[in-house]
Length: 72
Image (cartoon, rainbow, N blue to C red; front, side):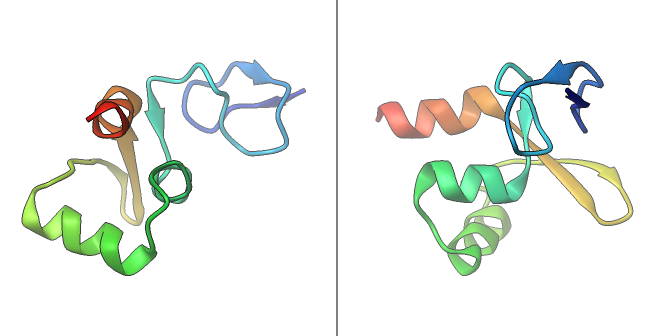
């Protein structure tokens, strides 16, 4: 098992993040929401979705926020 990039725990999936993390990557969120990168950045700039900056070029999105958007 490789360590998760978010929480550091091990995970069994092929991706860099475990499914139990509190946060997800922009690519994960885009895939889950079925949106393009252009739509993603537009939503981010419009404040429709929030992210947390965790480095000079890395953002994480609260998983609960993405799941809430899917349940509407």
